[in-house]
Length: 378
Ligand code: NDP
Ligand code: GDR
Image (cartoon, rainbow, N blue to C red):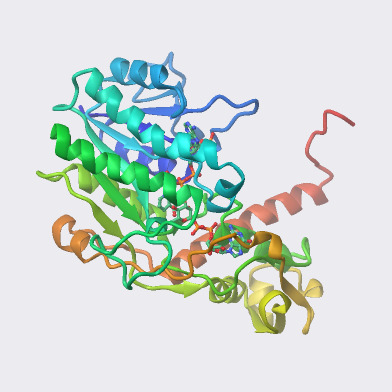
C-alpha cells in the first residue's frame, strides 16, 4: 500500500486529492494547521475515529513555516509521495502579508525538500509542488506553456517562483523525483468563498433568493482559464506516476472574463444580466428572467426586478499589479499523461451554482423555521 502525505489537506485541492487517493487504496496522511475553531469541513466525510480498526486517513498538526515539525512528520509517515499543496493562496492577501506568504509558499517548499534529503528519503519519496499560472503574470505570450517565460506580478507569485525553481534545482542537483504542476485556476463547489468564482456563485444564489441585493467585485475584465478542481487533482497524481520527473501545465485552453463568468452564473438561475458603464462605474443590471425556470428552481420571483442593479465595482478589490490574461496550453500533459479534463466551463458554473443554491436554500429554510446560529455573546 502506497503512503501519501498531503500538506494543505483542509483546502479545496487537498480535500479532493485525499478522497481520490483513498479511493486508489493509498494510506493518506494530511497536515492541518491548528486553529481556534474546527477547520476540517471539507474533509470531515473522509475522517474516521482513530480508534477504529484499519484507519487509512490520519490528520497531523503542522505548518510549512516549522521545519522540525515537517521533518518529524515525514520521518513518522515515510511517504512514497508528498503533495505540497499548503500555501497562503490568495493573491490579493499576499500584498497585505508578503513576508508570511514568502515564508510559507517559498521557503516552505525548501523545508519539505530539505526534510526529505536530511532523512535520506531522496530515492524513495516523490514530491509534487503546487506551482501556478500566476508565475506567467505580465503577459509575455499566449497560450502559456511550459516554455513561456515567467513574470510574476504579486508577492504570492514571487514566492511561488522560488518554490518552482527550488524544485527544479533539487531535481537536478540531487536527482530527486520532484515535479511542478503549473496549474491554471481551478474551482469547485468547495472553492474558498473569497476567490472570485465562488464569490459570484454564492452571491448570484443569494440575490436570486432575495437574500442579498448586490455583488461587489473588482476587475471585471481580467481573463482566466478556469477548470474544475476534480479534473486537476488527477493530473497531480499522474505526474508522480511517470518514469521521469517533469513539469506540466494543466489548463483547459479556454479563457473567459470575470464579467462573462458573472453572466453565466446568473444565467444558470434563469436571470439575464447586461453590463453598462466603464471602469469603476460599470454595473450589471437584470434585463430579463425566465419565469418558468425561476419557478422550477424555487427562486424568489418577487425579489427579481427588471432594471435592478445586481453587480457593482468596488475599487478595494483591485490589485496593485494585476494579471490580465491567462490561457494555458496543456498539450504536453495531454500527450505524456493522457490527461483530458471532463468538465468544461458551463459544467463548472452549473456545478457551483447548483451547489450554492442548495446551501442558500438550506440556510433560508432554517431561518424561516426560527433557527439561527447560536450566538454565545447574546
Ligand atoms: P486553499 O487556499 O483552498 O488551501 C490552502 C491550504 O493550505 C489550506 O489547507 C490551508 O490551511 C493550508 N495552509 C495555508 N498556510 C499554511 C501553512 N503555513 N502551513 C500549513 N498549511 C497551510 O488552496 P487550493 O486548494 O485552491 O490550492 C492548493 C495549492 O495549489 C496552493 O498551494 C495554491 O497556491 C496552489 N494553486 C491553486 C490553484 C487554484 O486555482 N486553486 C491554481 C494553481 C496553484 P487552512 O485550511 O488552515 O487555511
Ligand atoms: P487568482 O484568483 O488571483 O487568479 O488566483 P481570484 O479568484 O482571486 O481572482 C481572479 C481574477 O478575478 C479578479 N477579481 C476578483 N478577485 C477576487 N478574489 N475578488 C473579487 O471581488 C474580484 N473581482 C475581480 C481578480 O482581480 C483576478 O484577476 C487563484 C488562486 O487560487 C491562486 O492560489 C492560484 O495560484 C491562481 O488562481 C492560479
